[in-house]
Amino acid sequence: MKNGRLGAIDMPHRILVVDDHPVVHLGIKALLETERFATIIECPDFRKINLLIEKHRPDAILLDMHMPRFAIERDFRIILRQHPDEIYIAYSADEGTDLVERCRQLGFRGYLLKSTHFETVKNQILAILAGTKIFPEQTATPAGRSAPFSEAQLDILRLMASGMKNHDIAIALGVQDVTVNYHKRNIKNILAANTSVEAVILAKQHGWI
Image 1 (cartoon, rainbow, N blue to C red):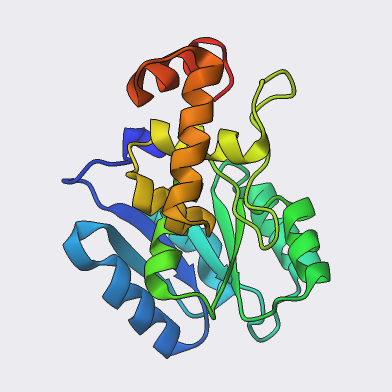
Image 2 (image 1 turned 90 degrees about the vertical axis):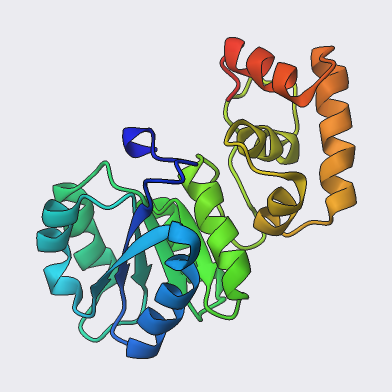
């Protein structure tokens, strides 16, 4: 997360939204600019993305997959080559597994569906900024092969470390609150930790998150 901005109430996240549909910009702005969660930078033409990245240095880039003249294999590779350290999030109505997998292989940190409720999108973006990869059918990638946790437990550990509450973790990962509580109990048992804070500290000390 750039500049230590995650969770900083007085420093809204900068989200660059690249989409040619004005209604998408209006919806994202209405959701994410509430309570100073984010400042939205609008980009209706993907050909201006490099200029806006250099000007605003966004924390994340929400990129529509079906803009006119946009070819993901060609154009995204060019963008990524020029700005390899940015956090790119695909935003699409296409639920096809082929496109999801292409985005994963190309280096996107997440793939969010436009059919998803806006509040869930907000929590998914926060989870991605915290280091979790969000893709349909597979919400994250493990932090390390030697970690004694399942992928689901690692997802929850990362979000615990970001300061997210149980209910927000559940929304971000698309699971029930009871599932989050179950995994947190197991995480603390594995680490012999008495509290969630202690569990996060121990996991960080071992380099698992």
